[in-house]
Length: 268
Image (tube, rainbow, N blue to C red; front, side, top):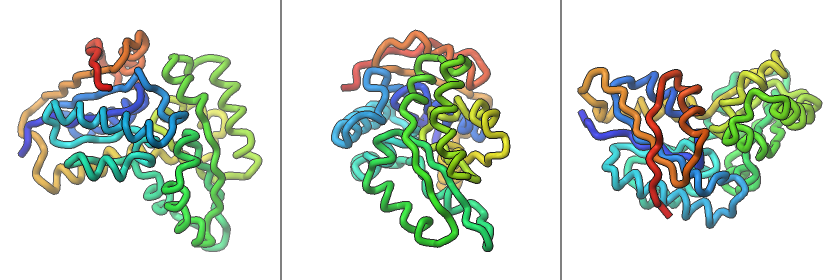
């Protein structure tokens, strides 16, 4: 057993989608969530900046003596994964490719898969190389789309607005024209928009890699006997690197319970 908390970080509030699944799987654990609201969004930053910001976040959580650090950010996982693994013990990244390979493909028809992610993820060389296996299988055809405005919608709490509907239409129509069968949400922020995207394209199968990351974290902690022996803990502490008036409201709306006001910390 290990009663230390589990650390989670994202560029903003998007990683709360991962936290939600973690709490469902491990309701007795204590969690520390860091939103780097000073540097959000990561998706428009250079690789060097993303690496630096990600290491700052991970080192902050390390200072809190966490037993596992969950990188609840696809952009950070794809652009800073190597550096994080080299410098931080017990780290879990969001894997975009694993959920794609797990899709059951029809032997007779090519599956059209749309991937919507941040600009930094779509243009990342490692990410593109990691897609060579599914693309080379002959069973799938991948269509990649950058969706930076989705992050802005979530961080500004504009999810349930006409503006959100217009942006969803803007991003999804080209993918629908490509006749995609599956949509992979390549950014943890996008889960906030999942229901609206599904309403726009009701026949589309949506894959959320953030849920995979949460399940993999639970599986690893269980196998290594690192789960807490406490009961009914459900303690979440929130930290942000810059004041964010909408953060608490957004976190509470997704988690379904009242959240404490995040503490502002200097991590850079």
